[in-house]
Image (cartoon, rainbow, N blue to C red; front, side, top):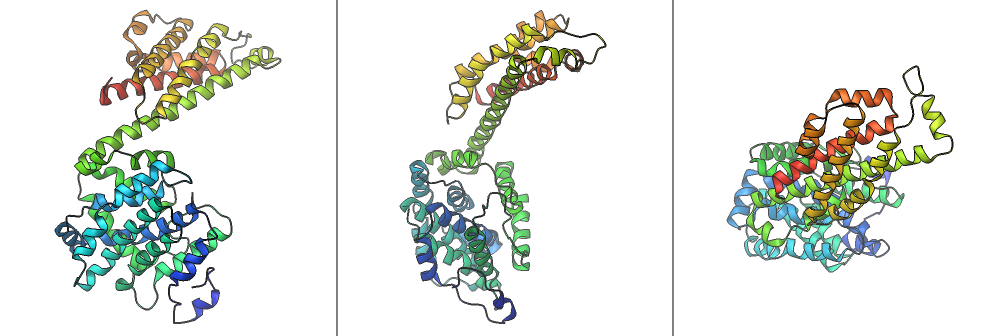
Amino acid sequence: MPLVLDNCYSMQNEQPPFDEHRLRQWFLTRSLSDAAVLSFRATVRALPLCVSPAATDWFAECNITLLQILRPVLTVQAFVEDDGALSEAARLSSLSLLTKLYDRKVHVEADLEGAISAATGAIYASRALFERARTRFAAAIRYSVYAYAPISDNYNPAIEALEVDIAFLKAGRSFDDAPLWLGPVPHEFVQINTGLHEFFAQLSESWSFWLRWWEAIELGRPLPKSLLRDIALIPDDIWQQGPKAVAAAIAEIEARHDLLRQVTDLRQQVAALQAVVLAPGAAIAHRSHNHPPELVDLPAELVEHAASLLPPLQQAEVELAKPQPDKTVLGKLVGALTTFTGAVLRYCGKTADTIVQEGAKSIAQKAGTMATVYIAVNHPEAVGRVFDGASSLAKALTHYFTTFGP
């Protein structure tokens, strides 16, 4: 198999065969993550074959669920170099599935061969990741590529897609924002992908994440690897409980990652506010750019209150990066946010004593547009941004505690 797409193939009726040996040799010159990403992309192109009516019935007879097939695919997608925890997750995600497939693979109908090859490719990729064996990914790709053989004519679009991916990788480009098919989307995929979307539409809310995950892959906007990694590392006993338990765990992980994003954004906004205040000539610049006709002093007391948010924000940032954050630390951040937003409202001439006492939830709900507009008009925009970010974060933290426990 050539390792770069040769334009002459498009003028020939025959397609060169898949050369697994040559691919294995090429993988020896590449990183483990290069082999993993090529295998992942080949795997997901074949994945819709696993949800045809005949395939789902056959997998059910084998006691294999769709979740058991999706889990190793996501695990390989989340991989980055030297991640021992993820390698162990890969082992668990493929455990026993190969045995189940081989026990039932003899004498299957022709229309099941593609689905079984697709599932086998997913499991082989996960095993290759566990074994940290670059060349093993070539076998996973072989299964994924040949999954298209039963639904293709003489020209297998998965082989061409692999060649295009290899050329893309050799050019030093990243797949981070690349669509699933770098060239034209073949009609075979359009057909089976329509079936996959219809299949997901019939499932319960417990599967909503997986549809979003799939659509992100299709469009070349994959979910963050940090999020995918935490999902891959969901304890094995939860995965064994099925879609509902996994969906609950994913919901908590997504909420935690959203909180982490908000905490990071607010910390950066506070730091930007400090930089504005401490910069040479900052006071004069801000005084002369206020909207009222008269010059308005920088709200130094609010800047000090905002600065006091930095320690609890930094501590919360560390905690939210953990699978099980210390919610006592997050509770302290709620207190700091309440103090800050209350100070802003008092500064704006609002009677906020009762609101402050009610805590962050009330602050987020009652700190309304009037206060925000007043700040934006009469004071530096940076203070208003911090106020808005603090109010939003307080509301999000309160929702997190309510939904996932104190």
